[in-house]
Amino acid sequence: MKKIIIISIIACCLLSFMEISCLAEKPMSPGEYWTGLTKLDRNGVKISELVKKNYIRGIGKGILSTVTIIDLNELDFDKICNHADFVLQYNEEIMKIMDDLYRDPANVNIKLDWMCLIAYSKLKGEDVELLIKDGRILGLLPNL
Image 1 (cartoon, rainbow, N blue to C red):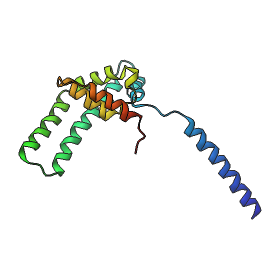
Image 2: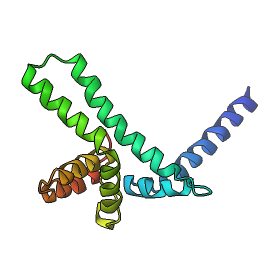
Image 3: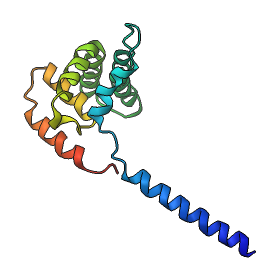
């Protein structure tokens, strides 16, 4: 019985040391993840672009899926569908704007979905400075 208790104590100590060392590692920021996807590219095949485009396409399809489960009046329904169609239609342009925005080191902590909103708004010709400032602040908050 004493051996089991001693082994359990040693195991708990080892596990606690491992957990502390894992917590000491700095997590990858959304910008580092986005720009780091280029490491997937091989032999001229731009796998990173496929991943990025599919992420943006998923946001557009998610908007459309949400529309089907909530009750909207016709005007709101059309407005939301237009947003989703725009995201799906200008997928590549949104990706390029996100690439450009993540090149700025001040933007690396802006979360991917927020950055997609910024790119969408910029492509629509809207002023995005406030969105960028808000995204930087939100990016510093812990995930809840």
